[in-house]
Length: 385
Ligand SMILES: *Cc1c(COP(=O)(O)O)cnc(C)c1O
Image (cartoon, rainbow, N blue to C red):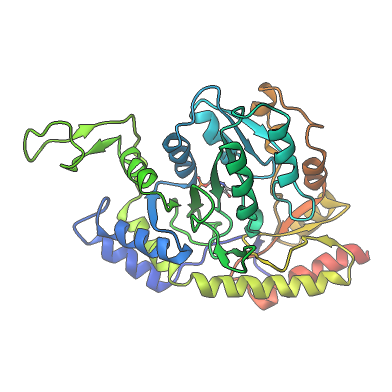
């Protein structure tokens, strides 16, 4: 009997443990030098100029909304097929969320639907867009930037699923998720199910110095000690609270874990690709509808999603066999909180149809060949019954 196989899982090595131990025995548990090292390494990894480490991906989204001055009355567009935090950050800052349906081929927000929304209202109605690189599939941000510029919008790229993912732009240039070339800000999560695990943790990347400075301030209570920024200066102890910020810091030992994991990120991506390819080939013959991808988009495979007719039956069948698949996601607009705000079932038929059929099957670098074979065999046997 196999041990239980989840849909996603962290992988901790003895190097990871050693890196954390080293920080635990150092002078800094938080706000120390490892944070800066992680920020530099991460910025370099995704090709952005600046990176700001924060407590988790949700805090990253909240700070982005604040840095972009989201306020009451602002309308921000996002996808219903995402983790609720992608939408919630707008609400934290007092703004309104407007959803746009997905492209059934990629499961990401459909730019045609976003364009239709924007063109149906006077300019200035909307202030921003939050596209999500769902499952690791990079959204074409070049196209979104063009649309955003036409309507004076900012873009926050929710790249939680996609560190290492990229697409080729219209000039044939490789554009890494989170590189800040098209989005104003991008965010990542270091939750254990994501590519880089730190227990909890998040990162914001940007190419804007002004946004970077603002994020640094907001991350620690809005407090600065930087002599260049102070309005007054009473001496060595002096600091000022200039904005209403939060404590959204990451600890140094979490940063050490994330940094150690980041050094293996490419190897992890390769393994995810190999797993995806094997699933692709195994299911091609079964006639299961699976995720379609444009060759230009290089998926980071946070998830491997299949679409099937008898989804609940398959979910239960796999569970019985010790395979814990998952559903990503229950459409956000159908959550009771968003229903209270006026959204309802039926608003986004493509997202809702996708939800009826989707299943995320095991996808993580430490999934063994035997385990994957077992998953494939069980899925096949379900359809052959
Ligand atoms: C995980 C996730 C988040 C939130 O990250 P946390 O670190 O769990 O707060 C936001 N958006 C998406 C798409 C995610 O997958």
